[in-house]
Image 1 (cartoon, rainbow, N blue to C red):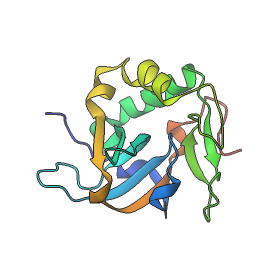
Image 2 (image 1 turned 120 degrees about the horizontal axis):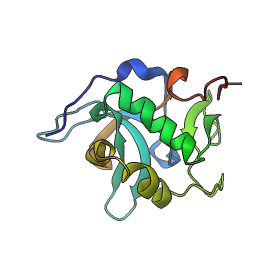
Image 3 (image 1 turned 60 degrees about the vertical axis):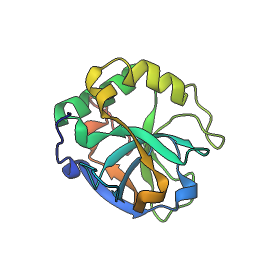
Image 4 (image 1 turned 30 degrees about the vertical axis):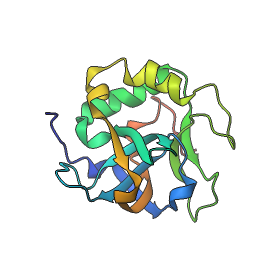
Length: 159
């Protein structure tokens, strides 16, 4: 069984998100009510939504220690995936997102490439990969996270 951490301190802000507006690369929080669940308030780096099985998939950052979360964003940067604040879906405020390709924002980083280059490359990341039944998800929010995790030395995604 994986160790669970309380990583809520990485969150700077949250805003409510309609379920139909999910984009890969967003960092989400939500309440999850499923029998036997060990993390009822995940912090999910959202990667994929399976419309057929109605599952949300991604990395639950609560199963990654804070040092490894920094490593995750260093690997993302090394793999040339851009990150930063945006507002593609017209929410009240901008939110943080790893720029994984979408119809609205094409990029070279696809969900499959992210999984193979980033998630598969580290056993801790593979063990933190989770699926959630969308029918059991409530209070869905998109977050912005603390800057020190995501900026390159000397730079900032918030500029």
